Image (cartoon, rainbow, N blue to C red):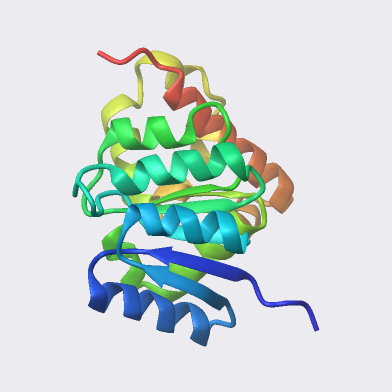
Length: 203
């Protein structure tokens, strides 16, 4: 039997933190640590070397983007560790800053997504395996705002189909099945679409 995916959780809301821990453990993950402070989160993550972490962007001690900064430092020191960040609402610059030029092993989810247990646990598993996970609401906003302008206009119809499927919240497997392509091809087009969006100059 394969070893359980090891997770560290960083979230200052105690009820949400405990809820995330319970959801992940019920889904077969091993939660090795949880904390409500960004500095403690980074220490534990570096020391315990989990497969993936789930961290809130805004956390103590400063209650600003402490969690995001801790996630950046973790990616710098332990690039093999998957990082899923949670945000109360969509902040484009946070997503751009987190993903940068290396989307592998990164997820950006709105906190409301935690309530969709299957989608949430699938995202955490995908990121732990070196894939990427973007919240469907984020993708929907990307499509709605920039469909015909900038680099998104250079995507092929097939790549736009993948982007639209992402907006519906489909997993790579779901995209592959609906478009009759391999999961690897779906993942490639998914990441390409995101990188194309991120390459557009900020206005």
